[in-house]
Each structure stands twice: as C-alpha cells, then as structure tokens.
Amino acid sequence: MPILDFLFFDAGGGHRAAATALKLAMEQEQLPWEPRLVHLQDILAPADVFKKVLRIDLQEIYNLMLRRGWTLGSEQGLRFMQGVIRLYHGTEVKLMWEWWQFRSKAAAPDGVVSVVPNFNRAIYEGLQKALPGTPYITILTDIADFPPAFWMEKQDQYFICGSDRAYRQALDMGHPKNRVFQTSGMILHPRFYQPLDVDVAAERTAAGLDPSTPTGLVLFGGYGTGVMKDILRRLDESGQNLQLILIAGRNESLKKQLETQPSRIRKHVVGFTSEIPRWMKLSNFFIGKPGPGSLSEAVHMGLPAITVRNAWTLPQERYNAEWLRENKLGLVLKSFDAIGQAASELLTGGRLEEMSANAKRIQNRAIFEIPGLLNEIMTRRP
Image (cartoon, rainbow, N blue to C red):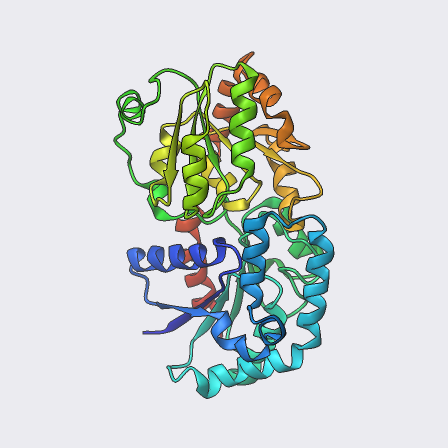
C-alpha cells in the first residue's frame, strides 16, 4: 500500500493533534494509502542549537513560553528563531535527506504531508534530494499565513488552506491554482462530529451548576494559565448572571487554585480531559486565547467566543481575532481586564443568540475533505 508521511512536531499541541486526526480520518475512510506519523524533532534533533546550548529543545522552549505567558515581543522572537533556522538550513536539508535515504530504516514514502510551519523549505529540499519528484503538501493549521517564510515558501509543492485569506495568500505568492486547495475550515478531531446525547440541564446540575444560567467555558490550552483566575475574579465581581466551566488541563496546581478560589458565581473546574465537545455542549459561550484550534472548536459547537488581540498575542494568531470579529462570531478585547463588560455585552440585546446562529451556519468539514484532496493529489501525479 502506498505510504504518506505526516510530519508534525510538539511546539504547541495543534500540530500533533492535526496529524493524529488526519491519520484517523484516513483510516476511517479506508483510502488506499498508509498514513505514517513522523516526528520532525526526531529528524532534526542533531541540528537543534537551542538543545546544545540551553539543554532544552526548541519545541519545549516554545511550550514553556506559552505556559508561562512569556509572549510579549513574540514576533521579534519568531523572527530570531527563523534566522537561526535559516542559519542551519544546509544542515537541516542534509538531515532530511539522510532520514529518507537511510536513517528512518523504513520504506520510502510516496508523498509527504507537513503540518508544521517554519521548516517547509528545508523539508522540501531534503525530500527532493532524497526522493526526486515525490509530492510535498503543506496543510496550514493556522487560519492564515504569517509571512515571510512561516507556512508558505516559493517552491514546487501543494497547499491545503482552511480559509479564503490563506488561499489568496498562496495564489498571491504565485502558486498555481491547481496546486492550492481550500477546505471549509480548520482540522478538528473526528470526535467533534460524533452525535452527543447530552441532557444539558441534568449534566449541569450534576456538575454543581444551575441548569438554566448562561454558562461560559474558559479554556487556555492543555496547561491552562493564571489568567483564568483573573477572569473568574472579574466575572464574579461584575454582577453578571452567569456561571463558568474552567478547564485547567494538566496544570494540577491551577486546578486546585481555581477550585478553592472564593466566588459568588457557580463554577466547575475540570482537569485534563478528552471530552471537550461534551463540555462545550454544556456551555453557551467560550472564553480563551485566539488559537485556531480552540476558536474553530467553539464555533463548530455553536459557541460565540470572547478573546483578545494585543501585544501578547502570538503573531500567527492575530488574524484569528480579526476573522472572529469580521464574521460576527464573538467579541475581541484588548485585555481580559474588560471581560465583565464583554460578558454583559454578549448576554444582553440578543447578541448571544445572534452570534450563536452565525456560528451554526459555518459548516466545517475539513477533516473529511482533506483525505479526498490528498487522494486527488496523489492520484493525479504523472
């Protein structure tokens, strides 16, 4: 059976999640391709200068930065990191070539799919050196590119984009239309499409919540953030009639702090969970950072979002907030200091119902569209 290598890394949780979801979707579709997950860090580890100097690899530096909230000046940090990547470009190409030539000790792929930014030039050149003519496809896991040299490079490859803006960016760069494809949204795990038989009132009651009070879901990735404590406090002080489900993820310390934090409003705190669709089903709106995955999940589940766009927002996520505002899917703040006022605006004058209806009109089927697009790309090659 022909093989498709899916390259991912763990800088943020979205890249591994996208690759895993696509592998599952392809297996469910029973397409005549064997999807094989390949961790880019395993290939490029010898060239990781950060690991050599700081004893911590590049992806973990990124994740630590996110967990600690060290994102002020992240655009300058990104450009510095890209400069280091370019400095070691020749070594990276050599490592990619060696991987497909002999280091992987596995059958050569018939096509390669990347769900990672920043390294696509090195991956492509290494692939073409090792296996000339092998199709190379980049699937953007951000709503738009953040040029230069983030997702898109000027090279003979395919792109799968999840928005009009990303599609136009690829064409404006000069890529031919027959090599650029657009899906109806971002990649979501197939579990978001499974029927959910949920008695909202009963499950809210079981979680210690009121069955009929407007409920916000507060989610900031797999490790949460201390900002969640401020959001709880400010909403508690706002006098609004609402309650919260707060997902602290793997951050047990944060979970305990949220559980013991005094509040007038009802709250339910959740640790790490794979049941995000269920908790979203129990909610009326979403509060979180403008990550492409979490915003897309919320919109898919019909939840208007409250998010921020400011100097601490990751540069590749800034357009996401604009996309949310342009499509009337939520509110964008300069800071979560204004969360009380934002909640009041969302919960009065029919705004919640209007934005929820807008969200429900968006039919994101990307996870089911991409396997067919990959099959088309692989079968059209000469």
